[in-house]
Image 1: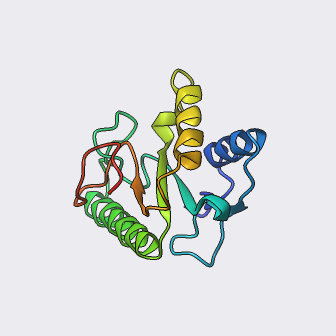
Image 2 (image 1 turned 30 degrees about the vertical axis):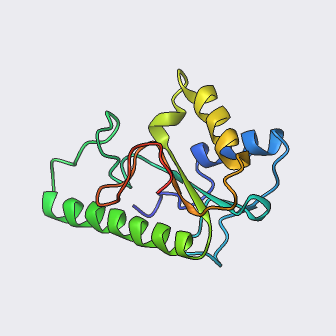
Amino acid sequence: MSHIRGKDTSIEVLVRSYLFRRGLRFRKNDRRYPGHPDVVLPKWRTIVFVNGCFWHAHANCKAFSRPKSNVEFWSVKLMRNGERDRLQHAQLVADGWRVIVVWECELAKPVREARLARLYDQITATTDGQPGIIDGTIPAGSKGEPGAIV
């Protein structure tokens, strides 16, 4: 596991390069915020997390499957990752940020352009500065409907 990258993954670079081409300027992997978000857009008061489906146990995703060996270790680890994500997102919302989660499976070639365009629209949409989580798949334990601001 020492070779697993914590930042500058291919999907993060893909999202950042798209946002930069669209004219958005941001900070990356800013350690001042809970969870060290992948993209911080202070002008829009928005934070973007680019999550891998495996590491963040993306529910109902074809790309996610639980490992068959060392099941207890992986179950605890992935559950802990999900709980940490929920706590960090809640803290950011409490601090007045809009949180957007982009999943790895949403960046597959057939749906990539549509998801990136939707991401840009979510960032630049005026919501009267209303903080919340904007995500097509609300994490388990959260309130709200998919795609809603929680």
